[in-house]
Length: 453
Image (cartoon, rainbow, N blue to C red; front, side, top):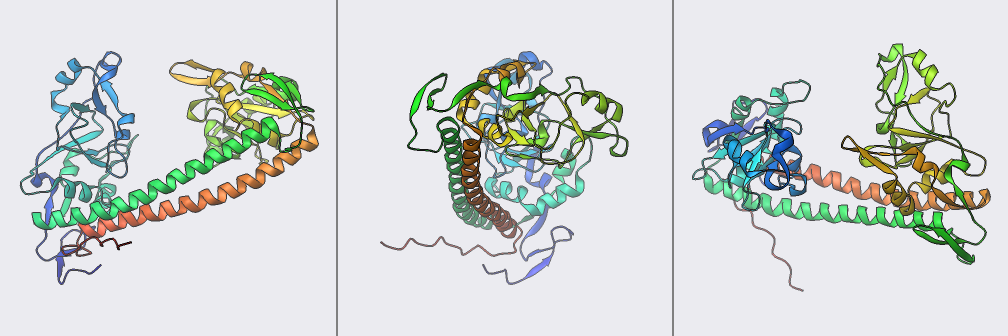
């Protein structure tokens, strides 16, 4: 893309030079109103199963759309009381806490709607400024540099409404704003389609892997084997020479961590204390964890000290049933959000991890999850009763080797596609910033005509 013929200083360090004819204008001067939402005081009564859309920060996507599935609902009475934060078609909303800087436009399909104090509401002077252009500028990396400078570091990062209003927009005249929008709508649309296709391919690969694991762990990998009726829910038959065993009989340790929240100490004073965040599918994640007093650690691990080769399984949250093998010599104990498993000589740790990744086990986990206090947890007593189709050890090794190879192939493809997604997202962000700051001239841009077949 070509550049403009001449530039001038914007007077703003983070913005740099802008094209001649553009003006650096503060957001508050192109807006009729900048305010923020309100959280209902009667939280328990205000939120309902179906009603007025209540938009939170997590409803605003990175690409500037509203994710309706993430919206809550409030009743009409509460919506009317919260008149200051009622959203109208054409309002621009911006996250001012949490994922700061995410921006979206309120369209017909979302109103009536309301929002909370983590979301700013901007009413743009539409006769002189294009709404989509405002969204692109506010969502650009250039303006986000300004947010990063102004963010107040508290328990949760946030930016004040005053500082939002002081954000400087490199502003061309309305016809040029429309040219920028036309260019970005087309190019980012193509990029978004590419990303969506790659994301779909990743999901299909994950489904393929999931199917392959379920088949191998419930039916084996020998296509010539004879089968017998299994009398197991979700698994009608298993290879004739396999056994069916209760999970508890295959373990020497099958327990969850300590239920009470311990007193945490500094790293140099304590011993590692792991929780659900440290268990990911097939692998531990030791990027972050807490520490407890050595005396408590000694007490917790007196009879069930985790060791290399044991299995950890997540008991709570969205990751219920995620399993990994302890692959570190790190000294640690575990919180109640993890189940600690030590297999006996009849089953391999790797086989247990694959078992927890079967559709069969997913169903068992769902049935064995107890919901309390708004959060589900996988009951260890239920896990003890799981009935596992069990091949001999040597066959377990063959199945593990087969699945490891297949998983490596799938992971390689997934990594390749994810890298493409990351690069395209970077390119998308760069393209937006270049267009809205005048680093490229798109006034005469036209989409390429499709070649005739």
